[in-house]
Image (tube, rainbow, N blue to C red; front, top):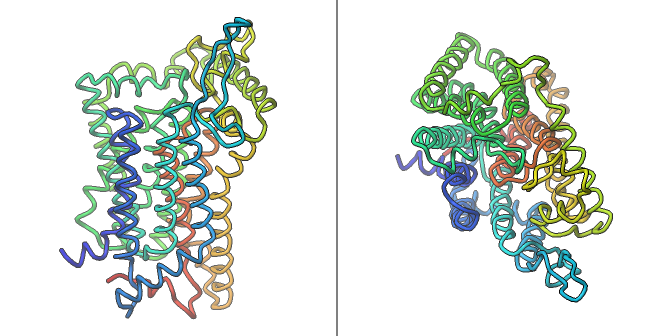
Length: 480
């Protein structure tokens, strides 16, 4: 037991940190979720420097020193600290609200306390600040402190915890919990859906199926069945049709890549075993579906199939999306660099919507139907650049590691290493691509659950490429 804790303790803490918002979103508000993330981030950061994965023949104090030096030398770490500082400033620089000018008898949108700094609606900046801290810890741990087996453990544990969170939410819905039922309606009035994060972990569970047989974790197979089936139910319950289709397609792509890897690297009966686990997961998911999913959700999902001339994306949705995007564009012209303030878009709608616009958007509309436009309206060009910059750092690392793998494969003439890299390598780019694509239809990518999951998986993918065979870093990156 002590050896297992020493080997996988960091991976387990990181998985709990990444999945924590999925346990809390229907039951706790933003403040308590933010507090939880900050405490879990502190624990995960301690594990990062106290119990990192050790390489073959490496003492624990050497591993600690190696990880500390790697983190300090990482430009992304220092840039992440800048992002945390900006999030802190945005949280403290509140005051954005509607104000009434009694002399001129007009309403206006009041700016933050310090107008030349990023601002927010009072009370809306605490959770983004906590998320920025959590994402920093997740990225640095995935990049520098997890070995090969620990990376696999993170994917498996996080998928299982997400599946467990989905089952808890489904049971709560069956018991009539209003918070869960409200989230399951997937209303476009506030187009921010927890199902996107369940979709990320469903894709990750496809990798976990292969990983269980690769690492000979036979006892983990039941947990992975819960992961795949539970995350599938979470995606179905808490995401609209187009998002369900997008993540399901991503899961098929990643599972196919994982099967090819398993057959090439492991051979034998691993292919039918993986397919058997998938079919059992589908059967368990069907039981969850019949017993726990509310009838209102069953009637709402994919209802367009039974409608004459029904479409996956209705015309009314597209019309509302275009109208809200035009409003966001108008806000961007007035607040180009810093935006109108985090959480201010519901008020922006009321100040910028024309009378004819209210015929296509709801009177209580809270968000845009294109998350990228809303991000630009609330945070401005500078905020958009800072929001996307970590992805460019991770993409650069991914590209460098990929090129190193290709060079190593050609120099050693092991060309199959290019086609059959570890499936974790494919997980990050696929997840980020689907999450970003869904951002053109909703604002879910900015939710804590989805943001943390996508960042962790992408960072993990860049670290999972095999090193050149003459150095065999990844092969010796074994566990304690």
